Image 1 (tube, helix red, strand yellow):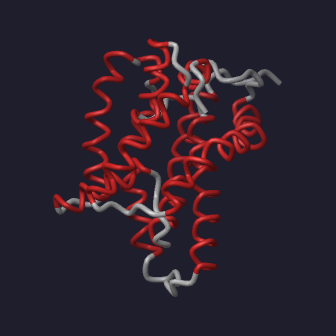
Image 2 (image 1 turned 45 degrees about the vertical axis):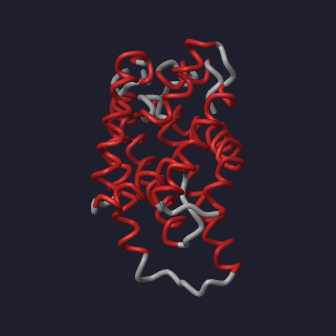
Length: 228
């Protein structure tokens, strides 16, 4: 049976949306557990709280600001997935935080914190892998490093690590939810996202779309620049 050439146009955005939902759940578990969220989310939560805003509205504003340089210098990284991520991620994190806060334990024990971190980071990275595997655009924050790499030839790590550290410091200054997990994500995110991408999400996207080829859109461009 011939494959429907339009299937991917429907499946990929829906897969990206599902990935953002899952990513938001993972970040909310990290946030509720008090173990620290990723630097960018921590920064947005901290500044948003100082302004009396929720994470969702402020992260949308921050994403809109970061979207401008990407629109000018990194259009190859933009797609419907970019819009899905930049508009919805913060709101999903807020939503799941509100749902989980009253029902999850807060006993302060180290073992509980470890469980929060392990479960949260696994879910977060699976969701990040899913939205990136959809290959319909990446978030403005994720596009910054590969955009610089494209123009300078620097390694991805040489750009992304200082980027994350800068937002980590800014998040701490703003009083955001910074914790050990915020630092540890720098070590675990890349390998876990790569594992979920290669073993789960890329094969699943190929099966759902009927397209066995690898990424050919914004994600492929990012990977060519050394992206995770």
